Length: 333
Image (cartoon, rainbow, N blue to C red; front, top):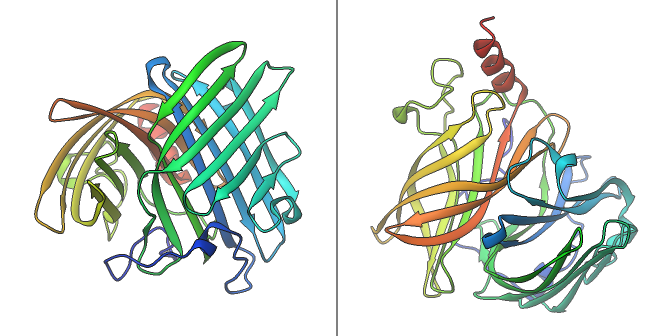
């Protein structure tokens, strides 16, 4: 992230989507870190269950890492999840054209109607776990200005059997999709970067990507340098109307031992001048390294917005310097 802007909406505004954006692009500069991704999820908030499903393609290298994990409550790391089934090294042939992704581990994601309907399934008899979920689009994709990344509010319905327990799925997750940009795995000497989503039914959803605001005295202040840019990207959708967030300030409370997020506090303003105050409590969480130079705390957030309850995703990326310096401080080094 220190030398790329793949996680930012440079230029402002929104891009344009076409049905082909659902499928494999495989385009971009022929560098090893050229990346294309699909991210899907669903949750069962009353049981504090979250599902993270991901497909990460390196088109130049013709490799794929992909799978899913499902976790309940707070976990220290990914192998404590009720289910973790993710392969790091596969041929890109498993994705085909992206319309019917079938992995050796039994996960399958079929496009039933581009940008409108997706069917996700998975079965593992040994762990008595099955997923059968339909993702229906609530709104059209929210495209970044560069036309290389979108998020989309979905309505997830179906069934989950997790370690022998059955759950009904009926929630409003936010998926995302990206292509044609490199994602270098370089070390980043920065404080944590947090990407969150939140939905409150069909009428309101939001997404923010940012660091803590140094004015709010985060845990890393005085330990890490302040990033040049605190807020990278964000949007709200109100009754189908897409608006860019123009400013955002946030503060995350974390555990002192593992620096895991506990509560997020957000204040942001959209392009029409409306402001929002959100407090989000992590009710499910696990730790996973999306790649080896990072840690990512992934969790399900219960949001409070003026007394109204919503749910969404929290993905906080941390790097070596932050974890080293914070752990050294706690150990008195």
